Image (cartoon, rainbow, N blue to C red; front, side):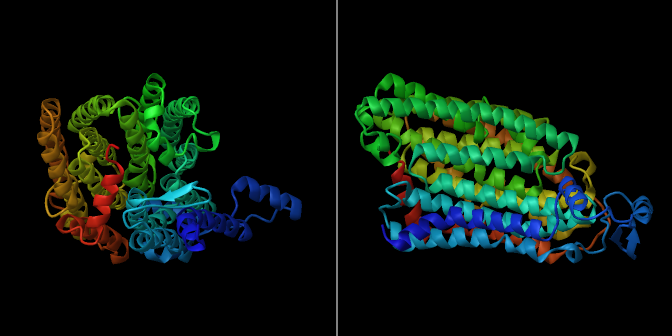
Amino acid sequence: MTATTALLLTAPAAAPLAMAAGYTLTGFVRHELPRGLQAVRRTQESPPPRARRTAVLTPAGVASLPERKEVAAASPPGTPAVSSPARARHPSDWAALASPTVILTCAALLASERVDGGWVSAYSGLLRADALTVWMLLVVGAVAFIACASAPAHLAAERAAGNATAWTMWRYHMLVQTFLGAMCLAVVSANLGVLWVAIEATTVVTAFLVGHRRTRTSVEAAWKYVVICSAGIALAFLGTVLLYDAARQAGIAEAWALDWPTLVAQADRLDPAVTRLGISLVVLGYGAKAGLVPLHAWLPDAHSQAPAPVSALMSGVLLSVAFAAILRYRVIADAALGPDFTRVLLVGIALLTLTLAAGLLLAQRDYKRMLAYSSMEHMSLIALAAAIGSPLALSAALLHIAGHGLAKATAFCASGQILHLRGTTKIGRVRGLLAQSPWLGALFGLAVVALLGFPPFSLFASELGIARAGFAAGAGLKWATATALLLVLVAFAALATRTARMLLGPAEATGESPSALWPLAAGLAACAALGIATGPLGDLLTQAAAVLERP
């Protein structure tokens, strides 16, 4: 292990965690504490200060708190409390971009110098990077860059609307950075136990982010998320324990009984019955985090209530990181049990999830929940590609993960700006978005077009690849692929119809902030570029798919 290798493997998780610690310490040093801690500190240090009139920034200037109510009453619904959200942005909001930059840099260096068709490891094999690891790090870094670049405009609007305090902003940044660190740790870990811990950490952290605004609906969604995902992660833990037991019974040393490369190399020695049960529990458990049936019910509530950049991260990469864990376990299962077991399991889950998502999209009236059900649709397509298991299908699945992450991050961040603009998430109450805010409407519309699988976006190429691989496989997979395509057409019609209702119609034009829109444009440009030509990423994609091929 060289120092450079250790640094490149450690930095993607360490940098966000260091940023989280920095945000926390800064909040305490600046005395921007929660109200309870502020009261305790004032009681200990000095007598309570005299009552002061709280000043707020209004379109007319500075007003006291009683005057703020008058301003709010005089303003039409959806009008922000400041004339320009940019005035309320803090430089600390932009500092969050350091973590995605570090993640992307480390992934690029690993891809260009370290992996090259093989793998590198550090800390006695605890951390490991192969082509699949690098691909997932690139996806996490790219989606995180879009979400963190969109956060300043979102947080400025929250401050302007009076929905946030200084402490809640510091807490938001701390939790988001911890979230990124946990996802990166899950990606670079070679130990299946550490992988479980990292994915469990994402559940704990994102639960607080889902309930960030502390409304009744958001808190209810957070509890629902915790209960369902905890049940799923408990199943994954039990499956991991069973696999550990099978490895120990096969004579694998205790220190290596959960090491992924070791388990893949010696999978033929594992007890088939125990392995079959363990893999089933793992697929169901991590499938809960990936939004797959049967433990999927948390997803639309959590994604609709979380802040828009957080929804972008959850839908864009958290689901994919959880499914990447399933892909790792699938390699072990296929080596130990043969391909038929995971194929039947994943095909069944994929079709059930796709059927449910398509049906619920037809009845959907909330655009954030609409995007959440669209995530279920795309994760089911990835599961179908994993079930097919051919090199073309696996390459298409990984390309789909990247394209879906970029397009969905753009769509969710745009939905947050639509919410601030219109003050509602109801599709029926949003009309004439293109007329009122042309750039925002166009970017949201193009993001949905990308999710629908139109060229030149990469989802067109990945869905075409999945269809080709499915029809080139056995008869059973041909029928499964045909059924999936019919269900995709139903979801296509539902998404297209509801998005058209939001975009079209007359409305009065309003001003737009370029600084709030450039991250969305960058995400769509990256998704389109990936669809036109993978360029230097083509070899990496092929190598990443080879990592997942059956041994």
